[in-house]
Amino acid sequence: MRFAFIIVLFTTISLSASAQWYHVNISLKKRVRLPLIAIVDNNSAKNLQAGKLIPGKIPALNLSQSDYSLEAAEEQMIKTAQHNMRFRIYDVASYNFSDLAKLYIKQKRFSEAKWYLLQSNSISRQENDDKHTIANLMDLALIKADMGDITLAQQDLAEARQLAAAKKWTDNMTDIDKEVKYIQQNKTTASKTELRYADAVMNAQKGDKKSD
Image 1 (tube, rainbow, N blue to C red):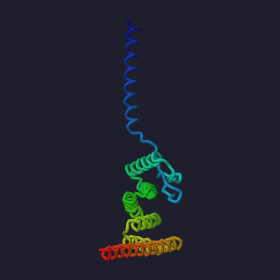
Image 2: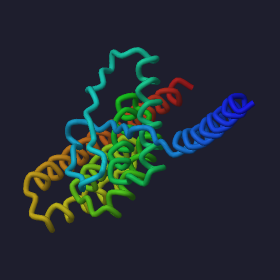
Image 3: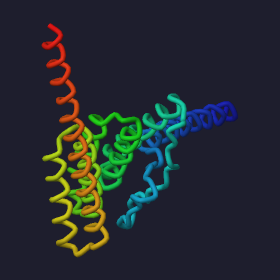
Image 4: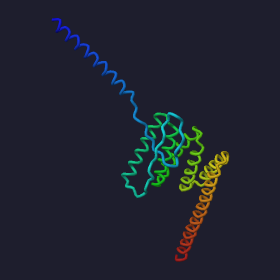
């Protein structure tokens, strides 16, 4: 009888310990977070504070890539940005958004690129990351110019130059000045093209009237 009692006692203790370990293990699994992943291009590397995620590198996109590859890259970038926003790693998420915008620019999806650059710019301002803000403003200016918003593009470049001048970043100022000239030249070229088209239409209309 005593031997049977000891067996029952050990069995009870073993089951209780197993149950406790099961609950502890489940609790730990609920608290485990997946390792953070960031996709940032070579030009957007940034010194982060201790304990924060160090961004990696993303390979340069190739326009000859298949639609499937571009969609896969887009999906991965969106997941990464959502992940960093969820865990409040806003500075890295800002670069994720600008990288996503660059992907859309390559595909000439300007409206989507503009939206993500605005999100990135909003965060970079809050983080006082003037370098990134300037880069975003320059990209925004080119997109707006391509979309026909020349005045808004010039305003973005003026703001970018003001930030660069305040920090005395001469290289950035030079790049901005080049972009200003590029947009001005394109505006002039576009205006001349519109005038030539208008003249051609007027001449065609005159010819139709004479033939009547």
